[in-house]
Amino acid sequence: MKHFILAAGLAVGLSGAAAADTWDMPTPYGDATFHTQNISQFATDVAAATDGALEITVHSGGSLFPHGEIRNVVRSGQVPIGEFFLSRLVNDDAAFGIDSQPFVATSYEEAQRLWAAQQPVVTELLAEQGLMPLFSVPWPAQGLYTNGEIETVEGLAGLRFRAYNAALEEFATLAGAAPVQVEAPDIPQAFATGQVEAMVTSPSTGANSTAWDFVTHYTPINAWVPKNIVVVNMRAFQRLPDDVQAAVLEAAAAAEVRGWEMSAAEAEAKTAIMAENGMIIVEPSDALTAGLQEIGAQMLTNWEASASDAALSILTTYQQ
Ligand code: PCA
Image 1 (cartoon, protein in one colour):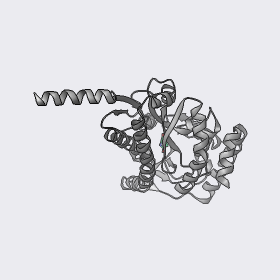
Image 2 (cartoon, rainbow, N blue to C red):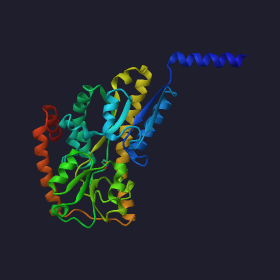
Image 3 (cartoon, rainbow, N blue to C red):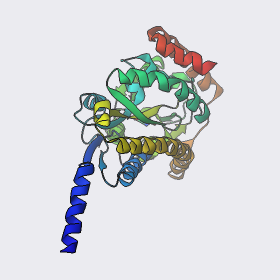
């Protein structure tokens, strides 16, 4: 009897506090991706810190919504939280795209400073859409995957080139290549069927897509350090009890720090895995670097021409 009363009391206590919430969270990249692993840890941390009052179920690899839909479904409130590649929002405002401009920020140190300048602007722009950023984590610097060594930009001419956003499409076009949009989980299939024959991406995505099965060379041009971002629907967030909101923010801050560390560790580890699997790692020639820098300069001019004052202010702050 005593037990029964205790159990009943506990049940009332719990439901009086807050009904447990379950949030579905769509993400674009697969389970082997460090971003996904970092997000799973974030979800575990939130559940632990809230005693299960908020459970986040991660739906990775675009399984719940395709990448291109994730921002929209969080915005509309169809799901409360999601992850996407930040610079895919460049059509909303150039501010979202600065981290995918070649040779603006090429190291983690520069990427940190760029994010510090970009974060307040991005936060304000997302607020206009009813979204709030929780954390943002970079990919390792982006390198070139080809069959055979590419000694100058001319070596890319005519290649079917896998792209993941508008900036990379522009980059490929300026290099004389033919861009084809392919989501990360579809890379092996796109190479296997001959849809694409070269790409620029991180060692993480290169190794996760077993790049050695379809290209021979990796050239770490390290031209940009683009980021993913995790956003929450503001109304969904505000509906959470105060202590749960605080727990989410705390877990998010930890996830951002952890994610940047994971990214830095990946860059080396995944390049080593590609070498172990027989890929030839070649430093870019001076001629290739010079040619790519010219493309970068052209792209930045185009970016500036399309940029809002807020977007331009990011560059000014960053360059100070
Ligand atoms: N991997 C993702 C985005 C950038 C990266 O390194 C991709 O290739 O789609």
